[in-house]
Length: 404
Image (cartoon, rainbow, N blue to C red):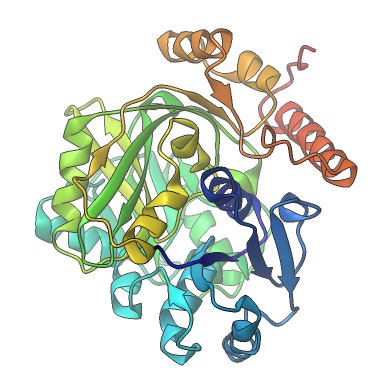
């Protein structure tokens, strides 16, 4: 008989809610979500218990809180699953200090550092012949000579540290049209106090229609359990949420799956992961943009498509199952914003037509609604969040009014 378990989720944001919902739908087990603050996506949920401490992101407090609580899970195995980049690093670096009753679903710190840091990730892609955009790394505001033309994309190698140094006009990533814009952007970033690297990339032409996002899980023995591909239809447009997906259609592509499996053959990874990539029309190749050592905030599209993400960890470390890897191909539309936003703002064309057809057929869902998680306080908070998205799209996407 399989051992009892309890999901211990690191984070109280939307990604943690999606993972808790997956555990509830698959096993009817309640998750415990840890964080520094009780954020609204995981508050007042019938299948989530929040445990928050203001110092939880500090390594010493992180270890102390988890070890203090180890006995509260009784004879159930606590599966620790990070639901954010910072928590992935924290768990990876300190899992050896945790009570032995815990089962951390993550790799060791060396592997995580190589994959999460954009510069070292691109070096890995270069070594293994995996396509990625041409890239130059800088560590100061000095503008380098570039081996590719403008426009260029600029991103921090250390996203967590970058967020700790806000400045006027800060974005998750910048698309810059000329050398003067690049010089001013580098100046502002380093003037903020951020003191690690940036990558300057050849900007791959095209918009959301060329993006792809892949969710996956690698078992504790290094074998791939699941690969699930999504085609973004619309991205968020608020400055610090650029790159967050607002609508995704799940589907399958064996060429993409083969590329990702080739990359994973050369790293000792364990756990959930999320990869962003973009199709380059200039050479007809999908190029990897980054590797996130956790499931993404939009990863619930995989569970919606019939491949419950929670089952990956349970079948791996609780049941010890070792079946052939799943290459998901089912089509479903995931929305992270009100459906009326997708109807209004998604670019006209075949991709939007695809999404609208799935919507008409009822093959559509979202992370935050649909699990009969109907505490009035939660529904009120989520409704306010939905309205907030409407306001932001009006403000940042353009001057068009959103139709009701």
